[in-house]
Amino acid sequence: MDLSTKLIHGGISEDPLTGAVSVPIYQTSTYRQKKLGQPGDFEYSRSGNPTRNALEELIADLEGGVKGFAFGSGLAAIHAVLSLFQPGDHLILGDDVYGGTFRLLEKVFKPLGLSYTMVDSQDLTQLEAALTAHTKALYIETPSNPLLKIIDLEKSAAWAKKNKLLTIVDNTFATPYLQQPLALGADIVLHSGTKYLGGHSDLVAGLVTTNKTDLAEKIGFNQNSIGGVLGPQDSWLLQRGIKTLAVRMEAHQKNAEMIAEFLINHPAVANVYYPGLAAHPGHEIAVKQMRGFGGMIAFELVDEGRVAEFVEALKIITLAESLGGVESLIEVPAVMTHASIPKEKREAAGIKDGLIRLSVGIEAVEDLKNDLEQALLIK
View 1 (cartoon, rainbow, N blue to C red):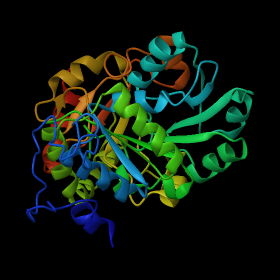
View 2: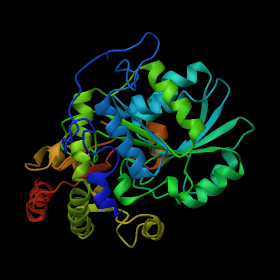
View 3: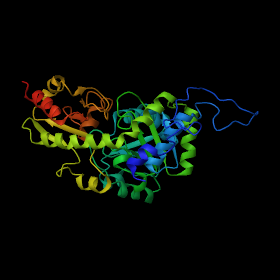
View 4: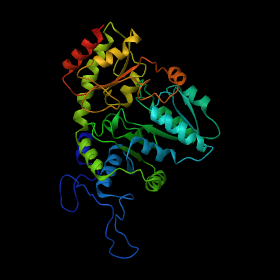
């Protein structure tokens, strides 16, 4: 089945009880048990809900996992995955990961005894240098947030497997439509469902899947024990959003390719980071492991001092955190999404104070170009 079809018909795509082509919102906390000590498929909605279950089966189907898990946010999903590890364990992760991921590790898990090393995960020699006797996992974002670094998933996962590490991939920017990390050797895939999967900036959610039965059992235990589950209303909204992922991603990346070309040729722009550009250092790897380059762009202005003036002058493109919605969103990572990472760590990773991240929406591309142009020209 083609992935575009699977987005609509994968997992549990209709209600098995009534045949409804949209799985209903089961707005219930508990379920009748016909005999004492013999619950049915569902007994309490923290442990399982039919609407959430349909979504979880769908993300597993799309990513090639054995089981899926839906959480109340992307960070709740990451928390459940990081809870697989024990005090004294060590992780290797990319140096420009999402700021919330860094904050969770630094402020919550590090005091509990989990350690980590941040490296440029494009470079296998840096991975080797970070490896210790206590290292248990490699945590990757590709494309990374916010610098759009492209990590060779097949090579990285093979290196991790050789060293008996788990490979965990945040696939939020690419989505399962553009990239299949499990098929390339990863063990666990994470998503902020808030972003492209939901696609309409109207929910907050996290998703996890794995192709390993033992990991699925542990993640499921953590999901139920920690309890950060996604509610039925948002589960329904997210499954509905996923049905249009293919057409939206095609529109996002078509616009992004044209916007990247516009920016790279503009005299007020110094640098553009977009894997669809032939000059991007990860372009060839992206061609190999992705079916498209996505809708995210990062760039820097020639005059870094004009960043605030520029983003505040935009009229169609919205100054806001998050990404992946149908509307174009722009932000400054050092001030917004990555502000929790200390300045020296940000700058060492290449996240300058003037770096701008643009989530290209599906508006008419000429309107987006005109909006950028008028803001770039304002003095």
